Length: 335
Image (tube, rainbow, N blue to C red; front, side, top):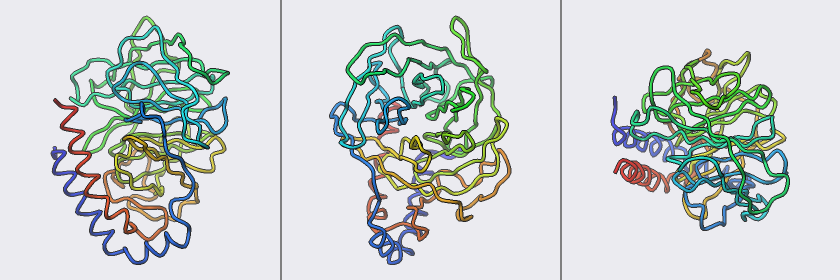
């Protein structure tokens, strides 16, 4: 298996090569369309590692997020102002180890995935927490249900957890340098026992994912790119390129409630959430139209800024910082 350092160096070289070649055209395109478009900046100084993002079902314009290594709490952020409008503390669960994902289910509950395992197998189980989405946005302590999760083929690291908006079934995508797996949970999560997740498909290196509101597409993102997969009968279909921004620590993605756009989040203080309109796939990007379960179009490949012309100048300039940040973060979490 390739080391993280090798992967990062190779990825940076590819990104720089593509970005440099496309620089004049990309810069002109960015100027023509007004830049990155709408989004917001998370203002709360307590949110320094926004690892998951989910659009609220009960409160339009509000997005749920959380830190990865923190107390059992989540934050509701107003996309109009970037300010936290509610902090929800979870009662009845243990101390989180590495919360990496959040999703809102069709049952009106918020699901939090404490599924990170940077040692790739040091924990024989991970957890999912569930609590009802509050009707009123205010600081509150709620009772949460805790579910024990294991994988049928053994422990692994994961950062993406998605609840299907129609069936309510929970899925997890594992994270691996050479590609991960998509895991399906039981039809109904249970307490007092183990919920076994079984591998049903192959995916690239994934840091987060989200189902479209109609449940017909699954988008998976990584540090440098994103792909969409047709979803039918509970399985992956043909995949295609999805335009994603290049961010310093690309950690999260969610659909807007109307399904017209994707919101891409990142870690760090005053982190930005970038909006990208959902457009009909034009076949660009490696692996377009690949068969179900394919890991082609590796998620660690060069990013596309959504303009169809490669990386713009600001994106090229930030690549060094991106790679350095990933290396430092990896080293910090392994100590």
